[in-house]
Length: 241
Image (cartoon, rainbow, N blue to C red):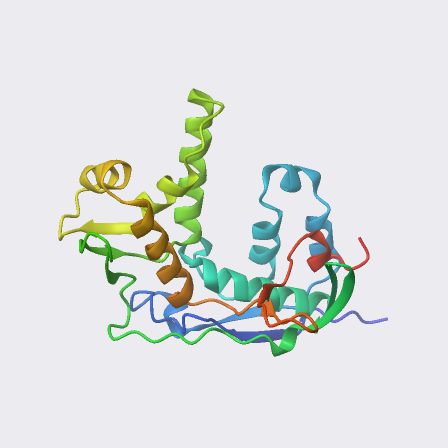
């Protein structure tokens, strides 16, 4: 029996459309090529070392991406789109989960990317005026590389103080790129710790969540007007787990 050496692939549209990546970066094309999942990639999903260290999904996605990209450059919303595509290519588009006391099945192929447009292509920086204080800031959409740096910093803080819980403020320190035109990292960190009001922090985070490129992982449960996030856990990639 002859075994095919070339596996089928699909082109995936990124929610960012490539607009946040600098010219010359392969991700600026707004698309990536992915291959279908095989038993070899399923081995990644059961790798206990990857699971315990929290990198199992990243290892899986890196194994499925065919395009020559720097994985660390991917913004979080684009990673989410790749994750959904990986699930579809691996196990099909039907995804069944429990919400409340009911079981629901959604068609993942019908999930849309959130609308996203910017005026300046190739620049991952956006302006926002804090509503309570009127301070003008700039912020960026976090990349996978940023997420790794944040986690490393949080792990370091935990070693110094096991009761440390600084995830929110730490993430803001990486998101905010300028305060009142000042780009010095020390100034930004001091601003987050001492001058960023909780109400402004909340509005900034809401603004970023509403406007950043991403996939729309929400659905309306039967008989409800509430938008609920589709739960994504181990069963998302292993329906029979």
